[in-house]
Image 1 (cartoon, rainbow, N blue to C red):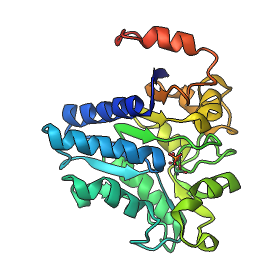
Image 2: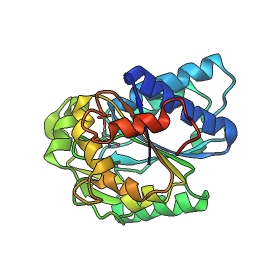
Image 3: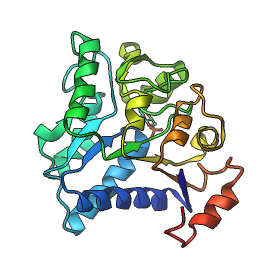
Image 4: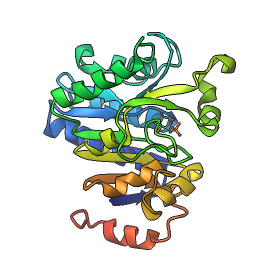
Length: 258
Ligand code: GLP
């Protein structure tokens, strides 16, 4: 794991945005795995700012979103498809035919999950997988107890996650209790992972992910097994890291040391 700790949220978001836009420039046909949540809103805003001030095209980029709520119809205001439209896709030159989502309202959710897995294989795999981090250590919607070898599937949401995400639902009673999510194994198959976490609420999960044991209790800890993971943190999210001095020493101004 390469752990970059920056002074504040703006610096962390900007570093993550640069990593992603550099990838798009280096490989205009790249396959990106995309994440949602509050943290990503700032990231997508920064990417859009870069795309309006510098030459940058997404027209040949393929995308796969990590997860979706089960049961939400196409166009529902809280669906991640709507989130991506509002926060990224409708403001840049993405080709809608190349943006892929899990259909949370599919009749057969098992079939839908295997369709998605196959589609990722068919395009040659994910080049760069963006990840946020749940306060309980989830990545995608892989809640604690998820198999570290899991593939795309239905996952019941924990009360912590329902609580954290209820802000997106006008009627909490109608909030879906389940999701479809890429599995931990699916995520680990990506050629590179980029996890962005900011704010003190994420500090305990960050410490478990980076310095705790690899355990299904903290699904993000499986990233320790990935050979090319970049973790970008702000000062607050890095608060509980015991080896923080070392990470800062390794990466302060010495960009080639890993
Ligand atoms: C949701 C998403 C995750 C995301 C997490 C963190 O649960 N399914 O992919 O990483 O939230 O979100 P936030 O950035 O809002 O804390």
